[in-house]
Amino acid sequence: MNRAPSTKRAPWVALSLGVAVVAATAGSSSQAFAEQPGRAANARRIVVVDLSPDEKEHAEILHEVRAALEQHVDAKGLRDYVVVTTHASLNAGGEVQEQQNAATVKGLLGAGRAAMDAKDYDDATDQYMSALKLLEGSLGVLEGDDQEVLHEVLLGLGSARLEAGDKEGADRAFRRAAASKADASGLSERAKRAYAAAEASIQSMALGAVQVNTDPVYAEIYVDGRYKGISPKAVAGLIEGPHIITVYKQGYTRPTVTVDVNSTKMAHQEIKLDTARRALLLDELKPKMALATATAHGEAPTGGTAVKELGDLFRTETSLVVRVGGARETKSLELYLFHTESQRLVATEKIASLDWSFRNRKAIAASIDKLLDFDWVAVLGGKTGDDIEEPGILEQWWFWTAVGVVVAGGTTAAILLSQDGAGPPPFTKDGTGAMVLRF
Image: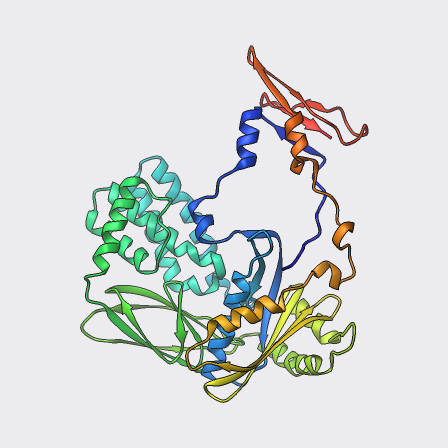
């Protein structure tokens, strides 16, 4: 696992009542955190570039590589990589309206929450409905965790309609959210019960399907923000009603369409992907990156200027070059991890025979774990092992033992140890009644 170098603490820490501070230090994980590991503060931005022949199985494997990268965790159990897709950079300047819509959605969400707090449920319903309409044409420009905004909109809409007395409308919104496995832990108790009822009703509902065809083929298909496979594909098990479909393929636009599904007839959706505005930039880099993977050898292998150009294009400090080959069911997988600024090839991993007849995702996840099982600091020549700084004062057990808090007559006194005698006076009022302790 990676070991990130420690960083120095800010020179001051504001303390409130001791009991509150100790409780905050102990902390407790939220339900959302338990279900989905949090993101490390120093998570590295990484882009995945595919050099494989254009085949459906290769697109499936590429998706699993990105998913394994996104889910990889460090020694503290935090996700330590942020996967940056090629789409935003390659389509820069061509998605202005969609990006504006996505920004507007976030504003509407805030307005919806404020209306709920004010118990103006009709206004909240309007805000959430407006946000949903915008997402039906713009969800494709949102990536990663940002796509969860659709779930927040659906859950908010269900809650607003429930409080407004529109139980049927609330049920429709909650069913749609439940079908895409939205996290309802933040809802009120009343809304949670309504959500659970909607979730249960799905089990007995007649479901429909949609056949998704794309031009070109072998694009990733997402329905309501959930990955469903590679086109062409029949996506089954969908509840009746509207669904948002987004498709992605490296070097192409990322359209969003809405399709109505019913249980009596399969829907069909044909989606055209245009070439990305800046696709030529990546096309020119691909043969250079292929050469970089072939020639980077030795004790400190480097991939040349193409590696840095790749990092500059996608604004990432790391890049993973993927090459898949082989027969239809038995594939080979090659992974090359570069540090883009230094142009350094820092790790490689290869699977000579990957059984893809049963979609061996575990083998891909294991390969990613092996690939990332090194210390970035050591590889790039920084501090390692005992040279890494000791934990800051707030992480030392003796600090909290030495801090005593006495509350008497509405005043708070604190006793603390200081790391050194330099710096500003230790006690400063911040205007809120709390004291700022400087060390």
